[in-house]
Image 1 (cartoon, rainbow over the protein chains, first blue to last red):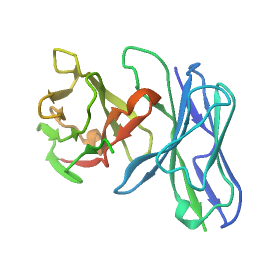
Image 2 (cartoon, rainbow over the protein chains, first blue to last red; image 1 turned 45 degrees about the vertical axis):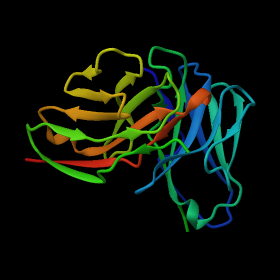
Image 3 (spheres, chains in turn yellow, orange; image 1 turned 60 degrees about the vertical axis):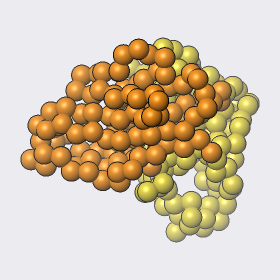
Length: 114
Length: 114
C-alpha cells in the first residue's frame, strides 16, 4: 500500500523554537509538497520540490524553509516558531500517472506554538 | 491568481439523499485536471474523483460523480445515497500549472443527518 508518512501527528512547541516536520514517501515520486491548512482558508502551498535538492516557493513561504536531501524525504523547517504558525501541516507527493497531479497525502501534523 | 471557489462553507443532507457540492474555477489553460478530496475529522485527505478537461464523459466513482460544465468552469461533486460516514470536509482542487501542485478551494463541510 502506497504511503506518505509524517513523523509527528501532534506537536507542541514554544515561541522561538526551531521545529522540524519530516515527511517520507515510498512511491518513488519526484514531486513533494508542504501545505498548511487553516479553518476557512483551505490548503495553502508553502513549498514544493520536484527533485532532490530542488525547491520552489509556494504561496506562503515566509517563516519556513525546506530540505530535500533524498528523493523520499522532504522536511519542513520553522527556524523560529511563532504563534501564527499554529496550524495543521500536510505533506503530499505526486508522480506521473493517468491522473497527473493527483496528490497522495500524509495524515497531517498538528502544530501548536505557545 | 487562478482561484477555486467553493461557495458553500457548510451543508446538511439527510441520510440516503443525494447532495451536490459546488465548485467553480478560474483557468486560461486548455488542458487541466480537476480533483475532489474528502477530509474526515481524523485529518487525512482522501482522493475521491478526477476529471480531465478533455474527458468526454463526466467522471464517476461509485457513489461519487462529477457534474462537469466546461463552459461554465464548474465541477460540482454529486454524492448519491448519502451515508453517515460521508460527514467530512470536501475540497475541490485544480492542478496549478507545470509545477505539479494543486490549488485548493476553501472547502465545504458536509454533515449527514440520520
